[in-house]
Length: 506
Image 1 (tube, one colour):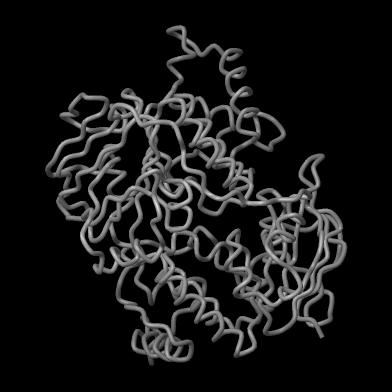
Image 2 (image 1 turned 120 degrees about the vertical axis):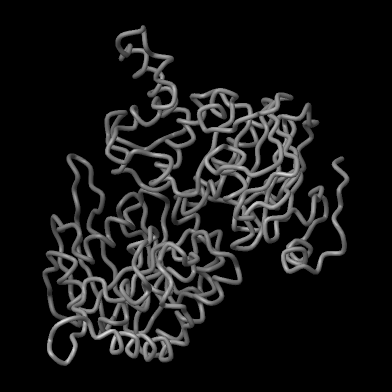
């Protein structure tokens, strides 16, 4: 008997079918991967199964019986839980308090107050059962990405979870942190919990899953056994086209003058500790380091979001006495942040409003916005970036993750930048959108821009970079020309075992 089965599932937004006659079946204890391009309907499917959206047709069966899931509470009662790509934790709450979110706290003997000892004991038993080690006294805001993921999974298991949906669970995790998550996933399936694993990372899909379902344009295309397919066939099903990934070609465009020069840059908390680096015109420079190495903090300090305690930032030969986001934008520096929903977009505004927000002065005649010019420019960038949407006036919060990221880049391009600071720019986007972003960055570099590129995906850094820095505990430990560099070379530096930095810049 199947655990979850859906037949003929439909969901309509306006005139658009987000899901059309979708079917899917998940067995107890299996790892079932769900793949598809951004906008294929994966998120809509998850929201229907977890009670966030109501379907416009079709039937959901749970353990062979038809059920109606009208809200997330209904889903949790059945045993369906989800860990979202955007972690749903309260930053100021401890691990214990987040573990009990949505659950009644155990009461003391006289039925008043909170029985903290019982909470701690239950948390300890749960961690022992699933082989998880967490400092539950820490607040969520002090936890690392993998710790937050583990905490959310533990919270799901507090509710006798039968089906756990993991939505891009390794986004922003390093390889080592992902291994911890995979071990926990296998522990869960051994105990009978089914996993619906949603990811754009093909290596993970083929490593973990028993079966794989492909969605395309809101429709179920195929369900295949992992052992009976390969990556090219799967991507062809997703895209309805033959797809072959090109090997990295060394870019032949010579680098130009320095766009960015950073000298001995530090922050008070030493997340950035005496960093010196440079990026030249027509150059893509990668930065790689394990979690906690200071990658995001370095980009934020260069951009002016994080205050520096020492060192210099020089943009196009001009020393920046005070670094601020406004000044960076005026100097042609743009930041593509890791958290696009929190830091790059205003989810309730339209695509047009988001794209033109940083450059509204360009469309102002002094007392009002020239709407026609603004609309024309937004439409042009939407077309250039191939944003899939009903039009410029659609709320950006209604778009898929990949299309949201395209809007982030369109917004950046409006500023005519000379330097891109990219923090995980392809996180949780489908493989085709990822290639589009790579092509865009290479084209921008060819046109004379400098690119500073951060990713947790080591292979991606090696695929796109002309040169790369390895960051360890806030410091640069290697500066390498990307010629015959292997992942093993990079990881050796990350773990403090590299044999001296190669500081030749070519």
